[in-house]
Image 1 (cartoon, rainbow, N blue to C red):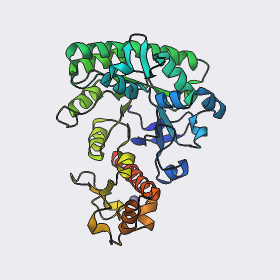
Image 2: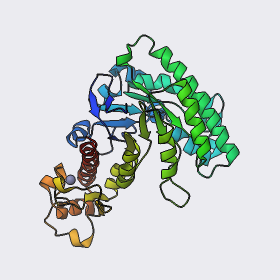
Image 3: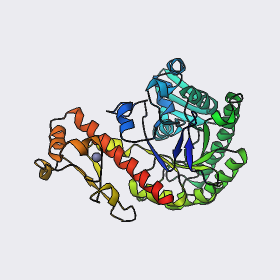
Image 4: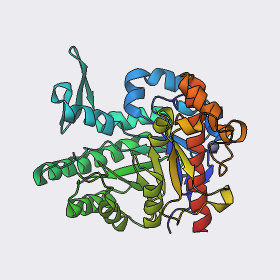
Length: 364
Ligand SMILES: [Zn+2]
């Protein structure tokens, strides 16, 4: 049976599919946790490597996890930190390298950190998330066959070490109170390698799979073929997670393939750069995700909005749309007031929570 809920360690059941925005450093830029709750966003993703480097386990242990630390009662996923650190070192080898033991990272000339699969899981357990993600070796875009094979083999070996560490840490925790452990399927554009990676990971046993690596082709188009291959290799009772995905139309297509969970910086980053997501429908009831043009972008500082008294969207019930005009938001962005970013971020998050709500209705 395909999962219907994302279960938190407090036994809260969040209906799937879900979108968790990125609260990378235990904060969703420009918002506090009450703001996030008010956008009806059910959970957030935090970044293990940033919290490892910048916060440390002592503070997390003292608070009893990142949820208490940021006063957030919703769902929490911690990523492994691998994607961020490897993106840096694979682009700039002077900053570190990947070895079988783990990832060597040099944040500065005199500092060297060895981040292992075991250390990733240990640190994530201090975050106290509802889902932990294994450390994986990221297959770079346009990797050669040999490179891709290397990353797949290391991803499988590391996943196995992560599972062992996870079982050690949660040995005394009753099964119902244990968080999920997610494995990541690598292999780049090589479909047979993706398949092999998935099959080997199933043998180790996890609660779900993530679409790992970079999901775009060299020409900038989303690689749905890889997404489908991973979905085809995923056991029915696993959660399926589109890591770092994506645009609203990409999410709609992936939910149809069976994906349940998504996280992405797009809605929040775009909001800060004056790109608001707006449904083309006139009201929330009329939103139709089967319409190929179900949404558009709105840039509030365009000349035509300077004196526009209407809200950003009539198909939205967020703080911005129910209280302020396009003209006011345009003014706030123009004078560089931080309230503009907050209101735009709140709006884009509500756009995404509505996007997921509409897909729940369709599934039932
Ligand atoms: Zn709105």
